[in-house]
Image (tube, rainbow, N blue to C red; front, side):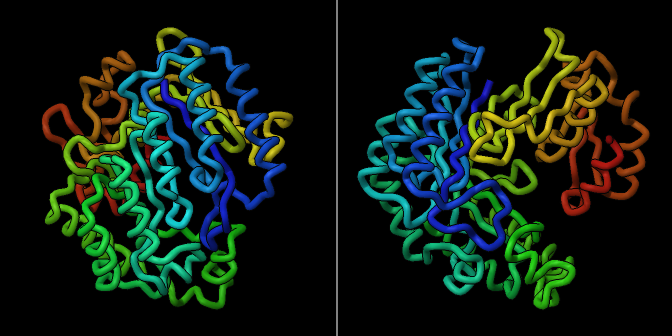
Length: 375
């Protein structure tokens, strides 16, 4: 199984962010980490094999490094964490130091995910980020000096006022540094964020958002540029050097079991030995998550698992195969979904090559229409 640990603390909340995160004083952090440790200790899956660990947030790097290391040590004490496990820590420029990075490295954290979002200082200010590009470059340099050889960088396309040319310039500044992995997401204007008030349906600045055509131009430019620099797109929003694909995220997309610890964290696990039923549970988005009922709880039948296999699997460039479908569910993929796949192949959304089905470039842009067919 995989483990996700949510650290909800930030130096400052970004204007577009709708993840559960907050600024807090040390007493709140103390209580949160005590509750987090208790939740891990009380989990009934002691001794289970763990293939990856992911510290997300929030900004895990904004809390004292000792807190992260103590949680990681506890996980290693309780579970059989693979010595070669991928252990990722999300971090923001401006929150990393030489000492922190050295201790992370010594504790076994093997992968850093740096939240840059843009290499343009004006855009960073618009997003409400706490850093400029120079601070990112310094954090990247320190991480390399500390020995990190697997670094991801997050970028956002479709930002108001950003066109394909300026985004290309931003990406090239990052690519020159040579990170092993890049995640490039289109901006989502989420409710209950300052951005929604500005750029949502009633926002005074909504007209400054890039059009669908302009956003797609940025996406197409991203694919071309990544390929030119030697990166392989392996999922709709993710690109990697060969061998640097995020194993933890691939686990999500291939229906590996995972446990989520902390506020707002989600878990997915099978509820029968044949793996024909599963349950997904998400903790409440509250600092008192342990005292509250789950925010979401969903039981998945065989039909639900098959649908998710198609939706999640088609997000990846390698797509899905009838062989794997039969192995997992004991049924023929063509019998279940052949009529949908044939129709969407005529639309140019998917391509079928023998046993394999995958999205075309155009299909990646309009895949939600296809995914709805499986639900």
